[in-house]
Image (tube, rainbow, N blue to C red):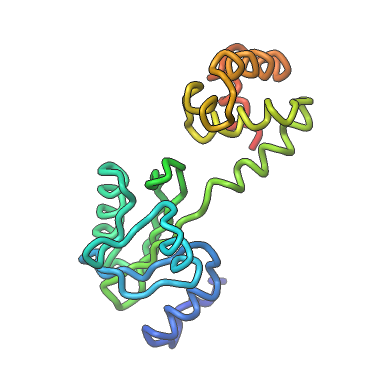
Length: 192
């Protein structure tokens, strides 16, 4: 038995309101041409804080050519082909990676674009670090590493030297019983 559609018997404004009600992440209603038509309160706050996304000439922009290309490709692929869905990973202006979900709106040539923050990964990582007995400093280094930061950038962000970051990385690998950073990352991916 199939589940009833979220979009059954709703007009466009009702669909938008219902979607924004369900999705508490930064969420935008975007035309097939990439113009922002509407957004939820979380998206307004993100824009106001100038965190990872902006609107330039009415269009969403992530501040990275690659991520903007992924966004535009997702919109072009999904618009008009509802209920198609797509998940991509994009990097915002703050250099953090986020999951971007694009969902077509039935009968409309527009899409919902929603961004999931990277923070939940660090929260899940905290539980794993307890299991391996990592210190809070090692946990911070590991979280930054998982988010794609280079050791030099991690040191600058945490206010420690690159040598100290590398010392933490060696301790992490020892405690996790893996060889190298790639082994630690592979283990984290498998476990989480």
